[in-house]
Amino acid sequence: MAALSRAVTLYTTPFCPGCLRAKLALQRFAVPYTERDVTADWDAYADLLHLTHGQPHVPTLRMPSGELLIDPAPLVLLGKLTALSDPAHDYNG
Image (cartoon, rainbow, N blue to C red; front, side):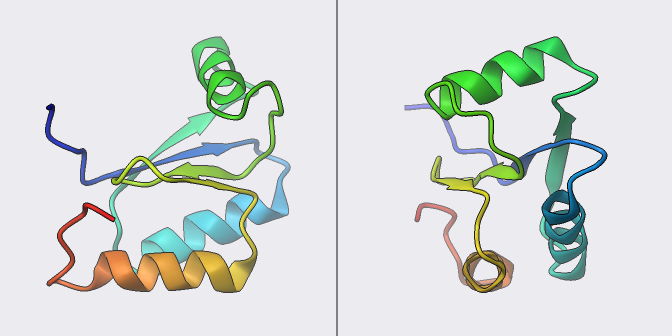
């Protein structure tokens, strides 16, 4: 099995308030992430459609474990990022 990436993939649009909140939270918790703007990158949009079964909601975060957070509530996102920022976290769940 391939090693899991330690980075979060964040699917965004430039006009999405939730996307801005997600980016700020990722930065605040020093969680590495790759941003994919689905309005500027056709491949990112196609990937988002595939991941969300045709429902292109943003922000969508693909966590290092492979878990998807689709338009997560702020407290849910903060809980997940708190776990990721814990140095003892093994990135497997």
